[in-house]
Length: 333
Length: 281
Image (cartoon, rainbow over all chains, first blue to last red; front, side, top):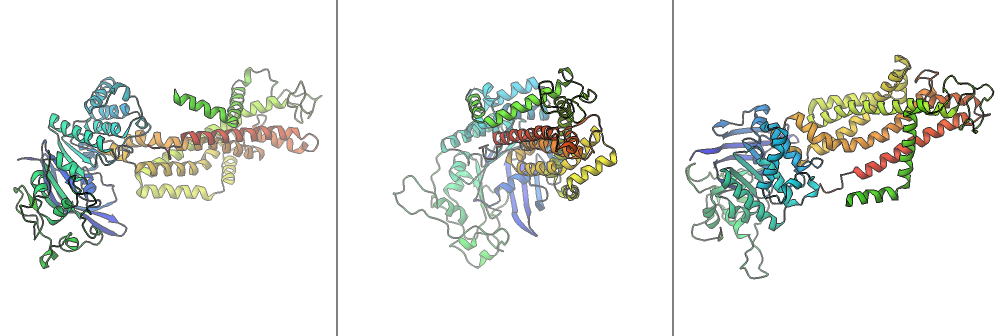
């Protein structure tokens, strides 16, 4: 499998006053062309920083240091200049943002925003860009696209705005789309529509998608593979079926047990994970989940490596993995 | 449709705004059409039989101490006062806006340098600074405009920078970057239109302040040289005869007062209409 995106040993430190926090630590994964990789983790696990690092979008001055390698179609990205980054953004890798309420410029019509990307980046004429913008809006399922293109973001609902954001991200035909919590700000019914749209678009265009979410159900039903992040590290990564049915890393297992089920009795106390996520300014030396994990011993003071090698499909970082054979979640696809 | 009726309702409720708009329209059209209006020459048409007379049928606003028609003097003076007020604001807006927008966006040492420059200008008392510039360059329409524009730069730079800082962290700017937008694109297309809403309304208020400042300079004889006279010069001219003929000083003062007030009312109203901070965007 030749990967579209190869991340190896990525580490990111962000400046935090005088100190630096180690926000991403030794993260490695691949995304193949046309594949959808789900990335889950709680707030502060490093999902957004990871996504922005892949686009070189961390605010200059806030990044203290980056190590490791990001290769896109074989080209190293970590050494790019700002100018080279600009040439790559949108065309090779594009991003869909969390909150469609703020991801659009309030003083330009949605049509103008898409047309601008088309004339600027793809060199289309004004008339062509106008036609193409309507086409893009139509493709992302915007009803009455000609009229909508002339409207301002405030005139559209959240779901429609997220469609515009997706159309904008698709305008330069990226090979990889990073969707950073694209449905968090939307109603549940609209969430499903947007996810189905992303799924449909990647199948139609063979575009790879990295779907970031803290919603396990969202990821389970759409992603081919899933990576679970905890405290800036990849705790477990594998095909979504395997990962959700037989999670091995204790954090993933605990996370899945914490999900409410429809067939549970009413008034059942939901399981929760005791404690809180590690403080990124003061990280523990060993396994970052150890403080909250009931299965610890002396070995956990040393960081467990991801099991297997890069060829292994289902990998996890745990000295005491959960046994296989306790189905945790029934995934309906 | 709805928008329009809402707009009308706001206009109907706000009688002050309507009055202010009416006054500014009247003043602007009079100033623009001054040479075609049947007015006596403001500088040379002296009527020695009617010195400092109060408002009458032949001289609607009376005459000054050398018998010139005050209405004509005020309308011709409006040309100077309004020109200085508008152009000084536009220049200040442009220079301050460029400094504020770029420093709020690029940050770093550049921002520090701009802030330092602004602090230096702010440390000079504004009227004294304008007087000095005007006196050194020599009193003329251009110089007095530049002097007032100069003391306006810090305020515009600060307001623009504050607005830019707010918008530069918004997600749509990040989204533009994620599509590979250049700095120029982000500054001109994403930030400028948003920032302008905030700064433009401040600009209206600023025109009022500029007119008053020009009045101050003219009162001190540091504005446009005679026989042309702005409102400030007219007030200064009325000062010696204040006891016998108070209208010579009071009428131009009143006109200036009403104009400054009208601009402030319009500025406040537009700020209320355009304030998007509270709106769900």
